[in-house]
Structures are given as C-alpha cells and as structure tokens.
Length: 389
Ligand code: SAH
Image 1 (cartoon, protein in one colour):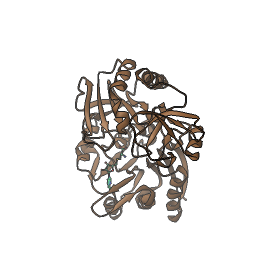
Image 2 (spheres, protein in one colour):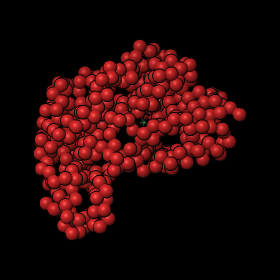
Image 3 (spheres, helix red, strand yellow):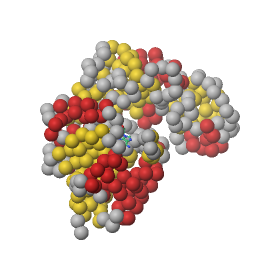
Image 4 (spheres, protein in one colour):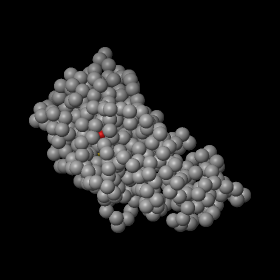
C-alpha cells in the first residue's frame, strides 16, 4: 500500500526523520499492512508502518526499498548486537539494552537484556502483529538467551506483562551493573525494578562520587541510586518514594549487595512532605538525586517536570550542604536539555547560591539514538556542584 505524505511530511522523511505524525499524512488512513510512503510527486520516501503509540502514528523502518520479513528483522538484530560488543565484554555488567527501537532502525520495539533473559517492549499494535516473525528472527541472532518476557505498552486487552518463550526467570532475578547487584522481576507489570538508562549515573555513584557522603534519593522507586551510592562507600543513604512497594523492594536491593537495610533510611512518603520534614529537623545532605517521573498524580496535586521541577530544586537547596551536589535528572521527552537547565538554574539563582554544572549525561550507548531523530535521546542528567562562598 502506498501512502502519500504532505509536503512537510515528505521533507521530514527526506531528512531521514523516521517518525510519522498525524499531520504528515495527506489524508487520514489506518492500515496494519507494511506501507510505502511517497511524496506529492509519487516518489519513494521510505518503507514502514502506521501504528498509534504514545508518540506519533508510525515509523519508517527503511529509507531504501526493501521487503520486510523475518530476514529483515534478523539483519536489524544482528546489527544491533554488533553495536553492543563493549557491553558484552564488560564482566561487571550483564543487564543492558539490546535493541532500541528507531535507534536500531525499527521504531516501536525495544529489547532489554537481564542476565540470560530478555524483555521485549511493544509500543504499538501494528508491530505486535508481526511478533512471530520478530521473535523468530531474534532467536536466530540471540540463541544464547534462555527465556523471554514482553511488556505491552499500547492500549489493548492484553496483559501488560507476559512470558514469551523459554525458561521462566527466577524471582527475583539478580543482574549486575558496574559490579552492583540488582534484584529484578521480569514479569510484574511494566517495570522490572531497574531503569537501565541510568547506568552511567549509577556508575559515577559506585565509582567514588558518593564516598563518605550522605545521599538523599528522591523518587527512589527500588532505590537503585541509593544502592549504587552505598556500594560506592556513601556514609548513609536516604530513599524517599510514595509507593508502598518501594520499601520492601529497596530493602531487598541493599540485602542482595550484602548491605544491612537497617543501616539505611527508607521513607514511604510524598517527596514534598519529606522536604518539610527534613527542613524542620534541620537535616543536611551532601548529595541529592532528583529523578521524578515526567508526570505524577497524587491525591492532592498533579506534578509535571515541565512545570514543577524548579520547586524540587528550591526545596532541595534548603536541605543540601553548602558544598553539596545536586544530581538533576529527567526523562521528559517534551523538555529540551536547555529548557531543563534553565529551570534548574532559575531556582539556583533565586536562592543566591554559587554553583557550577560539572557533568552531564544523555542516554548511554546501549540506548542507541538515531542521529536524525534527536528527540529519541530523552534522558537529561546534570550534576550541579554548589560552592561555599
Ligand atoms: N529514580 C528512580 C526511578 C523513579 S520512577 C530510579 O532511578 O530507579 C518514579 C517513582 O516516583 C515511582 O516509584 C513513584 O512511586 C514515585 N513518585 C511519584 N510521585 C511521587 C511523590 N510525589 N513523592 C514520592 N515519590 C513519588
């Protein structure tokens, strides 16, 4: 099937941008077939598919005329595997992203390695239709994988999480990253217990950034940053998360690293309540990690990074040591790195503190980014060092 794009849509594809948006189509159309995108003069632009997902309505998967079949998928997987040799060679890490959607020239699917197991994440129903051929191609290129699970990240009747093939993974499944052990659960909802895109930031904490320091980890989830800091010699860590399950999960992360959870602080609490509590108690931290979800709805209020990150910075400054380090992080794709920094720096300036941005991180190399689609590089992390005046 041929699909005609608007002038602007065609121009985007000529620049090798792989994401199709609603306004790029000459007329509204829905199909689950593979399609050929053409311009106003009926010239070939690319091959791909339409499929509604959280972002966009389709992907170009090749800018050359090609048949999309199992061999095509196998070729994509083989190329992706080749790009990750450095991770395979690292004995201290056995969990990383094997395949990153459009960054590996097949938007709509990611595959993560957890030791000897993998997790497929499907972002739209169209690509999911081709699951059989895709999984077969994957097994051809990754025969060493013992078992696989999947996450359904589009609206559907399917369960969010399911077993796909092979052996079932132990629960918890212990994986390693930078020599730290993490307890993961491959078949519990959409999340596994660790966000693999933060490996470089956790790596810094393990490698001495937190040594001898008190560390406050806000929006801590399973406490991955806290555990990395504790293994890296932190004097003490404090983890704060609203979700009840975070307590038990965070205790487990410490325990699997041989650290007595009772020596660390873990609070099931709204971060804004914790800021009040810590200010009243006059607590001070050497390092504060602020890595919230892009959006969160609590009983009382709605939080969004784009609107409220500055408040988090302001509240952090009240309990950060005068020569402390603020690790500011967001995965909000709708916020440019510059905008994010402007928000942070507006709060720092309002508080009249002297600071220096000493380090920044974007997605690590296993989260391959398409150079023609920089929006795909959603992660932004900045290290702000405060300076005593
Ligand atoms: N920083 C974590 C990931 C955070 S995921 C890591 O690197 O592993 C987002 C977490 O924020 C979830 O666990 C959620 O329960 C928590 N959360 C959302 N709103 C919150 C709030 N107002 N106060 C505390 N935690 C919150």
